[in-house]
Length: 350
Image (cartoon, rainbow, N blue to C red; front, side, top):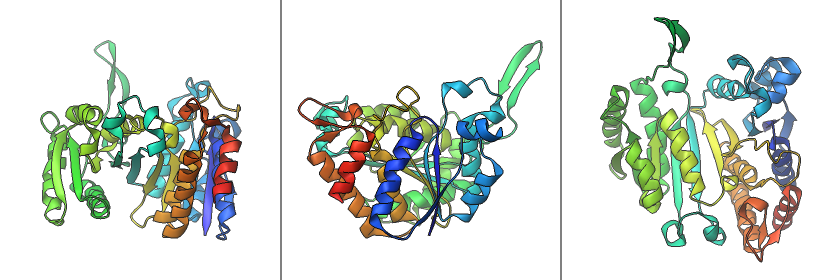
């Protein structure tokens, strides 16, 4: 069982180190090897997704990623920006399905900016299509037209791309509360009219799952107004990027939320939902729980080891119940710890 470990940039190496410690403590016989992705890869090789990393990622059963990016690379040419490495690995590995749970642990109800009664018991799964849409559509670019700069991107989806991500959402809903909300902008965008049509057709394959539709602007509002109405939310790449970040903040801290990006055979890339947080990099204060929980998702989806995944998740719950908190989720009376201290607490709970 091979895991390609990509610490990345910013706080990435710090949080990845704690997730690796947890995986090693389970003693499941994983073979783990590190490689470069993102800004660190640009600095070392000039390429955000170098060939050596590509070979390792393709040969591995799963990829565990920290985070990429930082202001020091903002001035780079587009093809040498860290985020191009992330887009590249998603495309090369065919990781079309992004699963981002937004779960509010009872101990963190006060950490949310919303009233506890609005978010208490929150458990949403956002399923985002990851390899299509406006992020990858061609043509794209910036050129001069009629004497001024003109920027353009192309949003498009094929019927088969839409149907396969919808099936992921419906299958996930069957293991939850059997409700899927498909989000689009069909009143303006023909591309998402097709999305809605295909969603309605695909729902016929799942008569045991309730399908609803919602326009993306209303979905953004409803996530703040009444988030517990949702179970599984499925949407395209751009809308999913925005809505999943919004949903993550309902839980009080994006530092708590894992994610999985899967191909058709459940080979996956697992990473925390947050970014590289360059403002706190190297200080040992970052929250590693999202990365540790991403490792649990890896055990569940790629390695089909539900028992080991649940061990990690139960350990995280125990640590929170014991009052351990990193700075992003700290409140008075709790035990404030750093990155390593939180990792130690999880290991002890295991």
